[in-house]
Image (tube, rainbow, N blue to C red; front, side):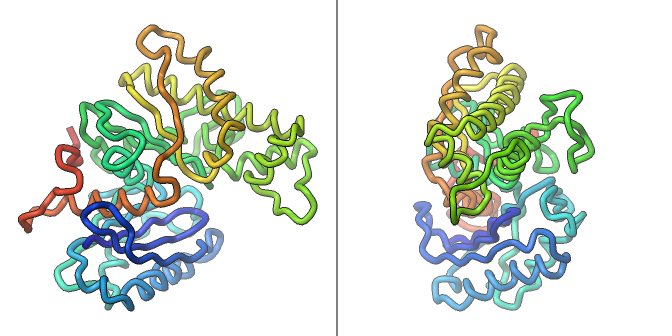
Length: 326
């Protein structure tokens, strides 16, 4: 059995995952993203409390922790752009100190989008691909890479962080310190904010979220359609830049914004015909995650299992998909 945590700007989820990638036990709390460092950690602790109350937790042999980034997998710290109170926060040490953690289990940190990439390559829409970009488009925008059939998290665990490619050189300042990042145009937070600024209002009784903007777009609302078109354009520019650098076979997009379906993917594919114009980037296959909201948990578990070197089944879930810093 493998334990998993998936920490993002909207929710903190945890699970017990079996060797076939099935989620057996799950727990979840909302992320107090604007709260104190202790408040965010309290939500993580609450999820671990719930998991440790289940009998399956006693059989957990490793624990993967997927977090919004940037992360530093060497130092065990995280600095999520969308959780301002966590800067160089010692997440691995904090999780390791939980009294319910099974003996000898040490948390293995990975970026949330890298975890999603591991899951999609193991069980999902990128299964078997030699070269893939997998993206989480949600509260923020993250990404991970598979190159030559192997997960490529980079030295610190942040390779593939496409959300902070600048696609608008004179654009708004980003919390990361740059300007005009993909995340400022394509994240769920950005979609809702830009739609409201342009005069869109959610349907009666609905919250002003990206999902509500998508619903309005499906109903033909011009502002909502324009905002999603702009988000798709930003994603297309970032994807094309990545494909030009490393050559890709497939791009998989998960996260809440991907649930918009054709509202997102139709303009995205259209914009890719403009941005991915080189012969080796043209016709790039782009589609939704096959694992949806479970990808982060399954991938965190898989990455942790792959990192094990002390058991006969070490690395079993990922096979050749071992993390590499090469």
